Structures are given as structure tokens and as C-alpha cells.
Image (cartoon, rainbow, N blue to C red; front, side, top):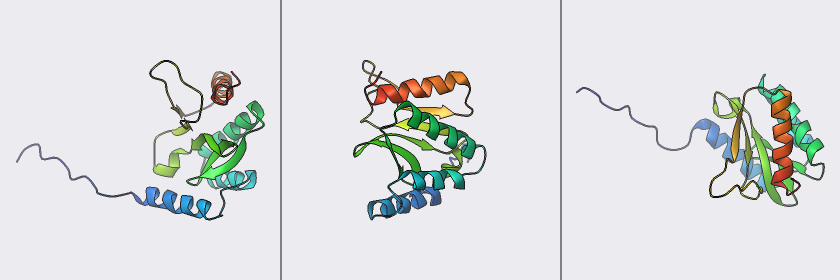
Length: 143
């Protein structure tokens, strides 16, 4: 039989299961709150994710100091009050080829009927840093 399709795995990957377990711990009073938990998660990341995570963390908090860092599914995340605004997903978390800066539906990034809510990040130059700062400000209604 030519052209037989490979079987797809059913269910969650072990990385997805681990993220769900982390989220359950966060919901039950684990490492959800606080900048120290976020910094711990970033410190655990392999390079180059760790360097990206540190820089993005710094950019987000310097752009909108009122955002609160917390973990979300074991990832660095940034909240306005109790509303998730954005998060950093390191490439190694789900064995992806790039890290992601994502925004929740609470972020004010609307542009017409279609707009991006996540961005692949491989490296940061001054141009990307400026774009991230502008996106975060816009997400909270500052831009």
C-alpha cells in the first residue's frame, strides 16, 4: 500500500501533561504568584531560552511596571490585576524551534477583524525590543 499515513498519537504529550500539572499546582497555591517564581522558571531554562526569557522579562516590566509577574502553566506570565496579558513560552518547553511571546484575549491588540496574538522569537535586536515594548504597552491600553 503506497502512501499510507503515519498514525497520529492520541492524547497529550509528556510536555503538555507536565504543563497541566504545573498549572494545577499554580491554581492550588503553588508557584503561581510572584516575580521570584518567574525568575526561577527563567533560570531553569536552557540557553538560548534563558537569555531570551531574562531580556523579555526585563522589557515587559520596564515597559509596563504595573504588570505582575506570575507563572502560568509553568511559564513566565504577566498580569494586570487578575487578567493574564502576556506570557513567554521557551522553545524547549514543547520542543519547538522558536520561543514565543504570546498575548491573551485580555490584551488590547485588536486591529480590525484579524490580528496576531503570538510572536516567534529567535533573537532580540533593538528593533524587536522596541516592538515588544510597544506591544506590551498597547496590550494594557497605553499605546
